[in-house]
Length: 128
Length: 295
Image 1 (cartoon, rainbow over the protein chains, first blue to last red):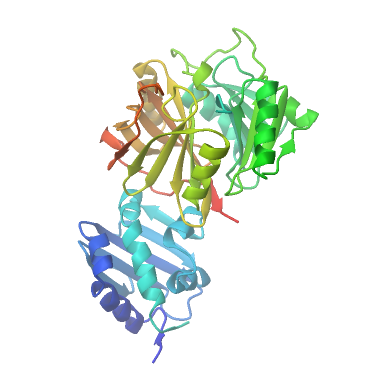
Image 2 (image 1 turned 180 degrees about the horizontal axis):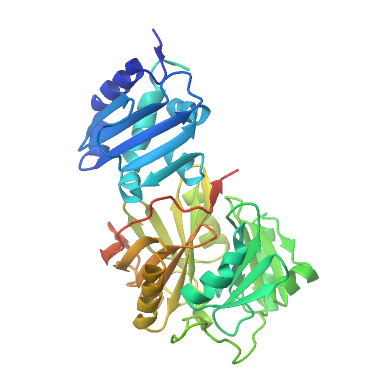
């Protein structure tokens, strides 16, 4: 059964799939980043965050209680493209499709983990 | 080797006029307004080294490479024809705009425009830095270096090395992978960094002859609260002591001193796992802003 995009079920599914993936854990090991995302025109949740904590990922809807290292704003369609693997996070950030602000060093250091995360997410059965 | 040095770089920006202040007061360059839409920045007696044209968004328009002579330009044209690479001969108007005697233009594999020219206009003893400083290191080493983002590193590597004759200097593998190329004693006049789906100008490096000039520019950034992209540091490969500042045209300027030079007789390619010996902490709060989606 498909999971609805940008819901608690989606956040749990992405979290579980990423933490079960050896390649993702290896790429994210040693890195720490709290990314707070805001999605314009979302039919579901408009805000979610991703916490990368030394190889362990937590995705949740809403706003994190801690201050984010990086904030990201994008359209719903851009987020769908990222989720489907049609658009890479680095591409979206570098071309302004996703407006990011904050600690670019932390963000770029996690580039390979984010690419792997996109591959994992694109393999999930998600309803957009 | 067709290319002798990086002669000029042209960019577009909605904020072109801001360079009338940023170029001289921060970088020490000599600005020249060329019509209503263009600011030229001079770094030596060459007519100009940077051209900032008014445009609706920040992006690189062209890089200009000096091939040294009309004969070399013809030889390059023959090489391009042999390889089936199309090119355009520069018009009289384009040559006048660039202040060169002749040029041809090529799109690289990622679609960025490169101009190959000879006969850049020089006006002896005409350069006056806009603030007290030693000088920019140019001459046979050209204006400095450019770092380009590319969606296809290997294809571009083949273009610049096999077609144009650039030589590999070294490679760095870190959060950003970088391949470096030289065409004269400057350690690199060109570097490429792979970015999926992205092309464009990441930064331009200009080198000054005195470390104090770097310090003076750094002080200007600090006192005016101009955000740096990377703090002062020393690179592992070219040994440049430098910092990076975001320009009004979105790309970064690396402002540096003290780079080593390359002697091909003894040079060996190396690889590194870090960009810097010390410093160069990335403090940018936004990505570089002169990149664009590749075709």
